[in-house]
Length: 275
Image 1 (tube, rainbow, N blue to C red):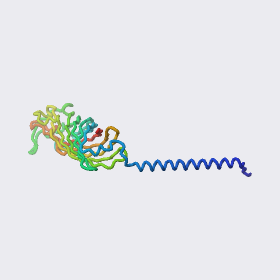
Image 2: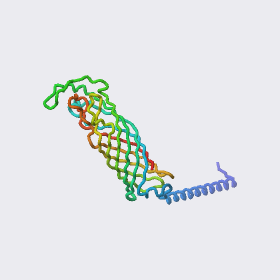
Image 3: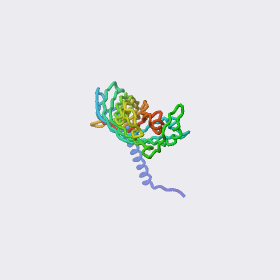
Image 4: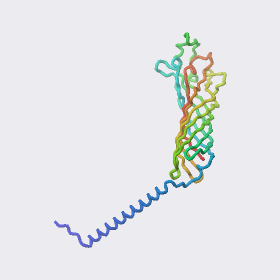
């Protein structure tokens, strides 16, 4: 069987192929021109071109926080064999603060970002088994056992931290209207609800911790430039360096603070900065 193609059909097919090839070449040249234009302009500064050349700038931030406590337990009163008798539950909260920036050079800035952070954490003391030590030893004093109620076992502790971090920021070059950065520094943190100077302790449901604290901070984020302001979403970690636990009064049974050797706050934050 022979395949027969009419001459006019053959001409029509050739014409369509020419049109298709021409259209493909046109699309290719157009795409190439657009990509070339993009990469030629990759260093352009559209929004707030002179913002980062200022010696000083200001702003504010909002933060969503997760505060937890790293506990190192006393092997005598905080542990029962391999079992931890004291646990902590993290708290989710919010914070807000101000931003002050000083430009050092093209890639370095010095930042101070004082703020307030509000949090509530829960500590559980399953320490009734410490009754076995009530007779005392040469190293540990005797005490009178008491029956722990639910209020005695679960402590919900509120904290308000005045946080004053000083950070050194290093950033890359701007690309369009974005710029990545990383920062690190040290913090002074005052716990306004520490109860450190209270004469009452956990036996009266008063959990005491240190008022004045020190820590270090690390942060990464992306600076986004709009026509009227700069928005910076960032992730920050703050880690206390000092021991925050305050011992209970000498006459208080060892069900609470005696079971904790070291308590240090770890905080993780999602921060939105407006400058």
